[in-house]
Amino acid sequence: MNSYSSSRRAFTLVELLVVIAIIGVMVGLLLPAVQAAREAARRMSCSNNFKQIGLGIHNYHSAYDQLPQHGAGTGQRQGVGAGLQFWNNDQGRSLERLSFLVPLTPFVEQQAIWEQIVNPNGFNADGTVRTPPWPAMGPTPNVSLYGPWMANVATFRCPSDPGVGLPANGRTNYAACLGDSINCSTFGPKTAWLLPNQNFALESRAAARGAFVAKQVMRFRDILDGLANTVIAGEIATDVGDRSISTRTVIDRPGPTVYSNPAFCEQFVDAQRPRFWNTGAPLGGDAFGRGYRWADFGPIYSGMFTILPPNSELCGIDHATLGSLGVPGDLALVPSAENHAKELVAPPSSRHQGGCHVLMGDGAVKFITDSIEAGNQNAPMVTQRGVGLAAPGAQSPYGLWGSLGTRAAREVISTDF
Image (cartoon, rainbow, N blue to C red):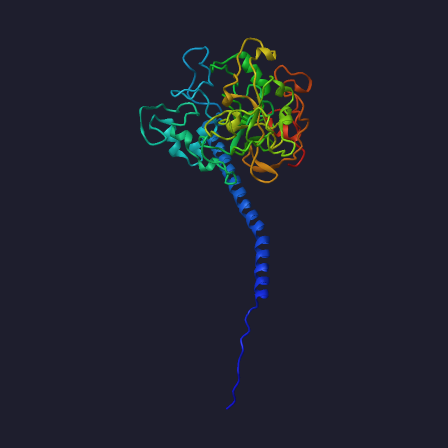
């Protein structure tokens, strides 16, 4: 009978270590691809949210023959005087401080939250009973006891943005385009007491050149440059407390320098870390963060301008009166403490690499890179009192980017973007 012996050869320690090393290298190579794929999915979801907002705007216009108003809500205070301006908070009225996103809610599958807003609401954000109930259209958007203002509406959030929680109320990553000049961007054609005023109307008519104008009804017919050539909204990153130049704003303490030089605040950028402010930058308050209130029409919260390119620095105005700017009459502007109502250069921004999404008037969502041609960043803005290239009706001084934000400046868009 033949016999034989069989031997089984095991892995040596060296071979095992080599296999483990190869697996480690493969995982290391694969991980960035997985992360990139995840970000691509988040970016597509972000774009889809914007498309939903665009569709909602068109449906709203079909229903009411106007765009959802930016700077709307229950009206003026009883009386005119110190402490009665629209920027003073109120639990009984919203004082025309509601963003375009509020009336848009029932058109983006958020009927439930709209019904809470449009009717008297007998509950606080924590579920406790409120007596008497909150009024229809709610208080001013800063009031954190009011439940709807604290809600995080999924359609208004970009999945790539990590911002969450206090000191913000409900956040938004989408903002109305207010044009290429910040002058009167929180007043529109009205005074601080929400009264129509000729001087403010003239200022607003000259400078407010975007698809949306604060406290004024706007329609598609007003967009003479064509819906496909006009940005009506832009993406914004929300603040996470890291002194980012695109989510926290510097306040121009000396006065209205930013009107004549939108890039004024560039001097406060950290030379070693150019995405952040330096330690000496005069920042606004901690609650004055980008996208912190979806329901608030203030430019820091839900507005954007086509002045500085996407992901550029936020730069605000700290000034006293329109009279000091050469406008007839003693018309007080926003005082130092009221950061939520300040005018500021507020570019769009995002957590995506290299640019951000914008929504065109025809509903198309496009990705605009940080390197888009943006003209002369030190050029003065168009205002009622402007001369030369800053005179009313002038072509945007901010190149292709500026021209995309104006609704009726008659610039020819001949460059692909």
